[in-house]
Image (tube, rainbow, N blue to C red; front, side):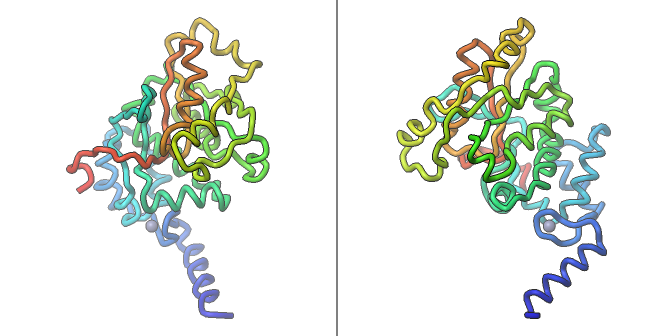
Length: 267
Ligand SMILES: [Zn+2]
């Protein structure tokens, strides 16, 4: 057995004994002290309803990893370039979030869906998710082929858990991807990206009646995806909702946009 294998086994054994392991670095979590300082900046400790989520986070994230998460200011909402679509992002697309998202999507780390969903809930419940009767969550759909390859829709996993935590309406099959598209990372220019996504989505004809219901007029449809770079995927999906005169916004886990955040929050 080589040195690396021995080390890996040792780490796994230690993790087993500790039982509370950081989802990011694999070392021990469960340090109660850090929660006060780190989670205070999310403005969540005063809300007792959140304890379940805080406990989950404490057991699954060590103090140093939590301290270096690139959170964005939870109250802020931005617009994509050349679009009026508003969106929120929990994180900036930087370490360790970029790696976690790649692991989540391409290495089948489905356990991370819960971690992301609980973090969104903790960070946003008092800013965005409190108006639960006015919100409907929908995920960006995957094409059938991509879904088969990956085994799960990364946006839907998070959206479904978040809908549960926040007790908001969730319509997982409202949007359909009617043709396979290239990954956005495989397209070079903005024009190529727009062409790649054009007409990629449609509203599920069996569910359109849900949107035409009179009560939907006061609601905001929130489209959820994992990452937003140019936002073209979200903009294309949002157009379909806007066409039927409903309010639509977007939420993502991370964005590559340069975003302004107040210094006091992250010092
Ligand atoms: Zn850690």
